[in-house]
Length: 336
Ligand code: KG4
Ligand code: ZN
Image 1 (cartoon, rainbow, N blue to C red):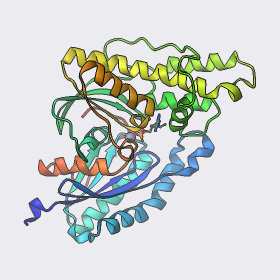
Image 2 (cartoon, rainbow, N blue to C red; image 1 turned 60 degrees about the vertical axis):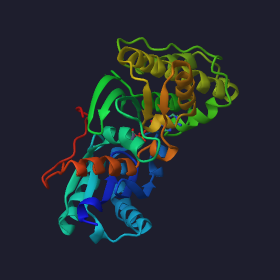
Image 3 (cartoon, rainbow, N blue to C red; image 1 turned 90 degrees about the vertical axis):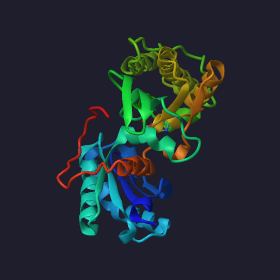
C-alpha cells in the first residue's frame, strides 16, 4: 500500500472544556479518547483560564492514550489535525501549539478544522452516512444553525441564532433551577419524569430560519420569581419537561420550514444538544410524519470529541488541503 492510500491521522480537539485525541486510519476511527474537566462544575459554567490550564495537563496523556489504543507508532502518522476554532482562545492555543510541534517534529502536514464543520461531518464516522444534499440542525453550547450540506466541504448556513445557543438555553435554565454545569443533560434526565404540558413557556417568534433563546430564559426567570420557595422541590421535573418542550418546538418549527422550502428530506442533527432524548424523539416522530430520512449521531459523537475532527481532516487530506506552520486559532465562527 502506498502512503497516499494508507492514511493515518492524529486529531486533537481542545476548543472548550474537553481535551480529546483521536486516531483515524483510511476513514475509520481506531481510537477516540476524551478527558472532561470537572473543575468547572463549582463555578456554574466554563472558566476559560481554568480550561486552558486543564488542557495543558491533559493533552499529553490523552494523545498518548489514543495512540496506544490505536496500536500505532507516531512515525506511521500521515498528518496531524487540530480544531482551529471557534472556541475559547486559550483552550484552542493548547491544541494548536501541540499539533504544530508534533507535525514539525515528525515532518508531516498539519490540517486545520472548523469545529462546527466537524460536528456535521461526525455523521461520516459510522453508517448510515447521509446522502448529499442534506439539512443539518447543529445545536451546541455556543452555536445553533440550520446548514444545507451539499458536499463534505460545501455547506451553507440557512439560519442561526441571533442571541443564545440552544445549549446555552439549557445550561442557563439549569442554573436558574439550581442545577450544576453543564445543565443540559440534567434537564434531559428530569424532563423524562415530568409533564411537558404542566407549564407554558413562550416559543420564540423569529423570522425565516433564525433562532432566539434569550427571551425564553428570561421568561423562566420571571416564572420562578413568582413561585413559593419550595416550588422546585415538588415541580422540578415538570419545569424541565415544559422548558425542554418549548426549546424543541422552536428548533423543530424552523427545521420543518427549511425542509419544506428547500425540498430536502434528508435531515440530520449534530452537536452536544443532539444528545437530548426529547430532541432525538421529536426528529424521529417528525421524520415519520413528513417522510424524512433522519440521521441521529451516536451519543459519543454528539458532544465534543476528536473523532469528528479526524473525519473532517480526512476529507481535507484527500483534497490536499493543508495548513502552514504560521496558522493561528480563531475564537469566533465566521463561516465554512
Ligand atoms: O457540542 P458541545 O459538546 O460543545 C460545544 O461545541 O459547545 O455542546 C455542549 C452543549 C452544552 O450546552 C450541554 O449542556 C449540551 O450541549 N448538552 C445537552 C445534552 N447533552 C449535552 N443539552 C440537552 N440535553 C442533553 N442530553
Ligand atoms: Zn462542539
